Length: 207
Length: 234
Image (cartoon, rainbow over all chains, first blue to last red; front, side, top):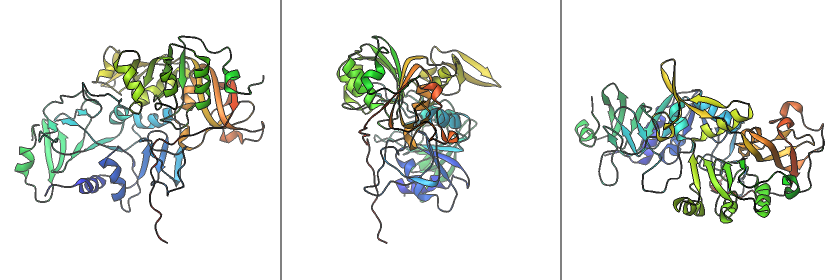
């Protein structure tokens, strides 16, 4: 059985090491926070916060306290606030250990496309280009194929790039793959999924 | 020199002109200079270029200046929440320059620090890098981005003393300090003006040297995405 969203998030949480400062993207990456367990993980929100807490209780929403998805959130006793230039200084400066992001396409050399589809409404890259260029490790969490059944792990991206050769590891509903010399390497298959099934669903070169 | 003005219109008096370049603080609708934007709308200043991370929503933030066609160009990282923006952009009435969010913040900070250009890895190999100078440092390729030097900065802070020493609140700080720094003149709107001497000098987020004019007012502080969790039973 391929992994469902929460299983992908739980698998992604295993990537995080005790003491890490981490940035989580929107969608499945946000769910990763539910699975960090006892590990000491500090979440960064790139609009200017380290130590992001859960959503507030109804009635406790504060318009001055939001995450990068503009959702109301809460602070923790360890929280620190700072301005956007400082925030992206720590991203660009490599202080954030990892970013977990969604993607539309990943290429076998680690190219990532997740911000724009030509001909469709372009909303902007936000902080995604800064994150993938700056953080220590870029982990993509996404479905292995798109809704037409086509592979999202490609020899080359067809969409405009967010970053060139930036992805380190990909966690899909079918398993875990690393970007290595010459292509992608299967690290692990989802429970009950065979390596043949992963290969069949992947356009990128598997080494 | 007295920095405190009675209202937004008087604080902007003599600073506005058609075709000017304005840097605005705020992230989404959080920490935006909503009173000063309202006064710019009332003043009717046209052909404005804004450096601002977002463009507001249709009826709040910079969105109100889009409705009145006062904006010529936006320099932003994300503009997805504004239908009128998209309409004007797709019909060619509005220019749009996408900047990665960190590049935009650093362009403001750099401009404020007298740095006309800097090199960053952000955007290398993407459309953002097209036409920009590339340079290698220690075997890695970087692109040059330019500092922003705005005619005017409009920002929102939580508190100030009478000399313009600013304190921001939580994530409403965001782009406000770098925006304030890159303006030739900076006008700040705050929720509270406290007597000089009542703020702890060690707790100032942005010193008053960057602040030229101050107004105090009531803020709507709209929430864009209200998300909550259920209170668990004790």
